Amino acid sequence: MNELQQFAEIDSNNTVIRTIAATQDFIDSGVVGDPARWLEIIDNNGNLTREHLAFIGTFYDRVADVFIEHPDMVEMKNVNNELASQSSTG
Image (cartoon, rainbow, N blue to C red; front, top):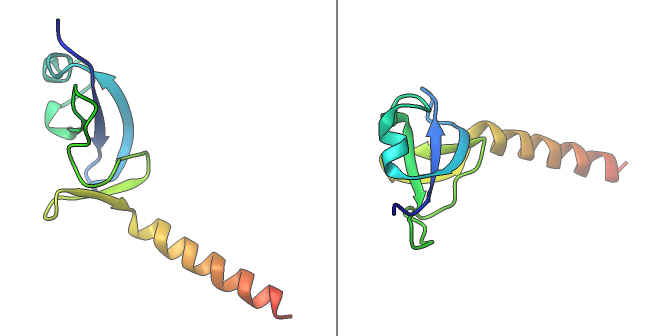
């Protein structure tokens, strides 16, 4: 019996667009799209296969082979923090 693993699907911009629990055979079957767009994030022993967990909206850095906060999300947080700081100082 094949054990379930966790996979993340990335789009053409390397942004995670969905995650699922599936077997490698299911991913390879193409039922959920191009298998090359799916990256294993948790193996069948429950271990992370990359440094950080992937979730929808995170960015996959192919060079470092790691999921990180999407650069746009980081910029939005910086703007929100700055606006919050300005409103609290008056």
